[in-house]
Amino acid sequence: MKALNRDQKADIHRYYRVKIQVGLIVSLLAFIILFRVNLTFDSEFEIFTYEQETIEMEEIIQTEHTQPPPPPPRPPVPVAVPNDAIIDEDIMLFDSEFLMDEAFELPPPPAAAQDEEEEPEVFITVETMPELIGGIQSVQERVQYPEIARRAGIEGRVVVQFVIDEQGRVTNPVVVRGIGGGCDEAAVEAVKQARFTPGLQRGRPVKVRYSIPVTFRLTKAD
Image (tube, rainbow, N blue to C red):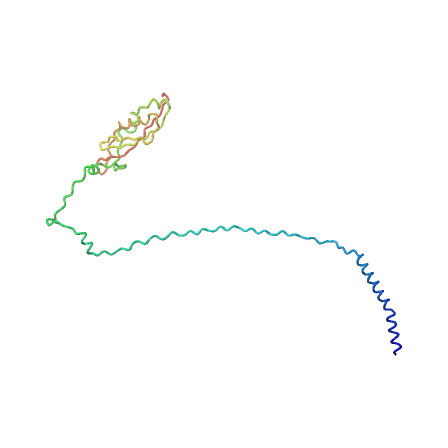
């Protein structure tokens, strides 16, 4: 058994150098292969850049706080006045000869007021309306056609308003619708010469407001 162990040991030491040399050679070959192999890699990946979202800040306008107006001042508190003070201030002195049974004599009303009361009223409609004596034809016959209106060819109707008094006469004639050319004045002159039966209200003559039309028309001879 001892002789066998020695032979084994002798064999181990015999191949020790061979194994070391083989290991070195394998290591060198491995390093050479590693250095010769192209270890460069193609960069196939891309870098993506993302746009950063911009956030806009809105300016906040500060609201103005208006203060309400102050309340109105309270009215002053009424102060109670003693009744004695009021009586002392309002002392009335009566004459000993003043008689309550006697009637007071009032002064007469002014003259202007009497005239206004006595002035008769002007009616628009009455129980018996005034009537034009001779009809409207009597007024048309008194019309003097103005030469200026005749040459200018002015035609139309003039309305004259007036007041008929208690005697049936025409007073205060006024043109309410005219045509010009002197026709208005001619119509007023013709109406002034007209006569009416007076208007009656409750059996008595009164003033009545009235109006009549005066026609101006050219003939072929003109």
